[in-house]
Image (cartoon, rainbow, N blue to C red; front, side, top):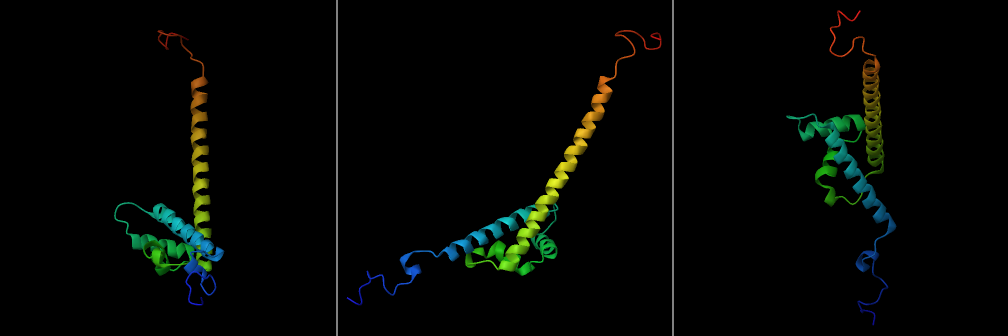
Length: 140
């Protein structure tokens, strides 16, 4: 009776297959961090000849997250159970600031594009000074 494996007493929640809410939150935070790093890596890519370690170095310098930790998030995330709170926060803040900079640049581009369109509309609305088929020097 005491050695029965069907007894729920003395078994840990891991043995029963139940996850604690803290474990689920940790995995969500880890997944979010990995997603943010992937997005930031894509945004920081400068083109041909740019290396991943150089991109990680720029992200590390700008975000305050150590480069080694970014490497772990990128390549060894399956071994990680959680993400450090300070690094999670720094990565999130840097990701949000990158998103805000991107939105501001898109707004500036849209304003510039609409400004150019408005300029061309004024030219298009100008009435023609000469009729069709007439030489403009004789029209006056």
